[in-house]
Amino acid sequence: MLCMALEGTRWVFSLACMDGQAMLWDLNDSKHLYNYHGGWRETINALVFSPNRYWLCAATGPTVKIWDLESKTVVDEIRAEVPGGASVECMSLAWSADGQTLFAGYTDNLIRVYDVDTV
Image 1: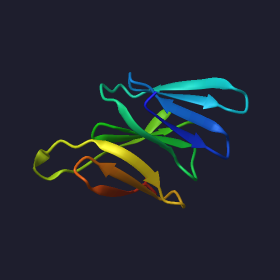
Image 2: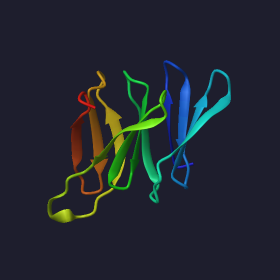
Image 3: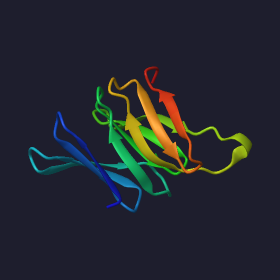
């Protein structure tokens, strides 16, 4: 296990494994719900649930993937724009309280701010 996230209103728990999978668990029923395979070769560095949608975000390499947990599909894939094509990795994620903005911390010591209201 590399990282984990808890969604408190539905008591859903997610954890990331070394193989690039995010596993989803229902804590009320103590049962495994689903494995999300992003098709990555990178490690998942961070997980966070959206505060106002049933979404799970995963930071992996330079990419942030947003999964819709009900449809089990990728809603969006956000890639950092880096001048000169330098390589960066997303290492941390956080949502604004209203769920409209996603903050992503990268290895170039920048926090990028994404408006996800349009997703």
